[in-house]
Length: 521
Image (cartoon, rainbow, N blue to C red; front, side):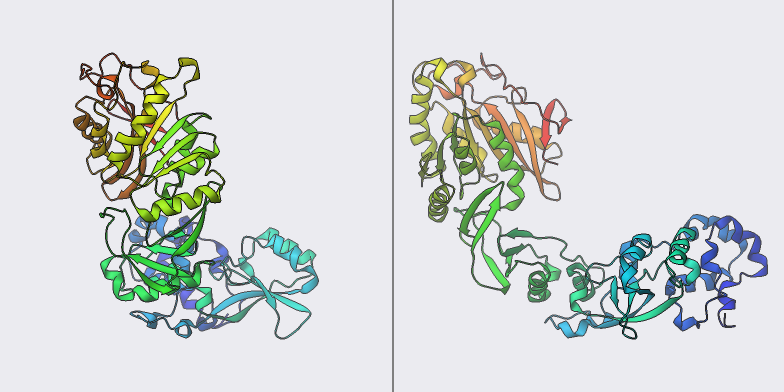
């Protein structure tokens, strides 16, 4: 070992008794057999800096920091990547993507192995082999075509003494020299992950894009204000780093219009918004710029479908392009699906044909209230007039979280005649948002206020997803009481003579007050 290395690794006289309890691996300190200079050593800069600083502080400091320094050689994977495998620092602030600016050369430890035994050696070196997506762990030896170079983890392998006994034993059996060489590896734009690229480009300390909604070939982003100056670069990176994505868009307004779609800006890639998605084994096609589609609701679509039985009747008040209607029809349910948006109506018809359920779905293009007081009323009158043994359950789905609760007033005195058996009353699944500290109770009170009854003892609330900080999307499920649904019935604020909704058991239920909330998570 060169004289320049000794000062770094030989502890000060006053420190010797303190080093022993730290459980430092001897392999990290024993480097006498390595013929290398300081600049050639593959030791993280942070480790050298800390070692140098250790000499200058009192012994008592080491005892207080014992746990921290005993694990210093085993740096967490994400921290390692940020030190060695991060993009060049001079890309900070880049607004127009220049892929050539991401070139970087790093020094990697390698082990020279005969090509015919590479697979056997790799099995024994899983612990120390380089684990970096996009980088080959075995490459050709530029000096000898009969050999291969195995890339090793630069944070674990410093010298031949870094191998464990079992690893050295295997290498000896295979007649492989444990001598470690160094290899200059050139990293390019292709070797960096999207999050690493954006973290290097965006202002230091600012949030980066860690995820997006994928809608067929489209990446749908919700950019924050500090990300907007870099929006076109972000869009291109999303396309580059996600196979199959050919267009990146950013939502530029909230879904607050009549047709439940939003304005969007194409950040990069194709302008084509006609897309195809596959959800729960069903195929949907639509123009993403003109209809509403949220891939995060896949689990909820499946949950409602599982509640249905063949022969049941489903009224889908705000059907969109069919994510509730199509699976229900495939389950041999009778489906009435409606949407006010002419584009949604068009693609709903298309998707029913695409999934071969067009004979089982009656499609409407009406306002939600008109749909409830027209086709739904007529069909309910027929269904509830059937002999009891021929009747099936009736479900009404109202997936318009921003406004659906307001439409519950349409059920007041909707039907004429004598009430049917309470077991056959329609079951409503109504979606809503809540920012309340007790979202379940909040949604129950909102729905109850519209209907003029209390729902807290006779409904279940399902937590669908977290939409934003302190904003939840929930689904309240209840049977419409006869006192509400039929004309000239006495309203009992505690649900009259009608029994509370029979809650279905679920594995994912947690309590909030006296209300059950079932969660997708």
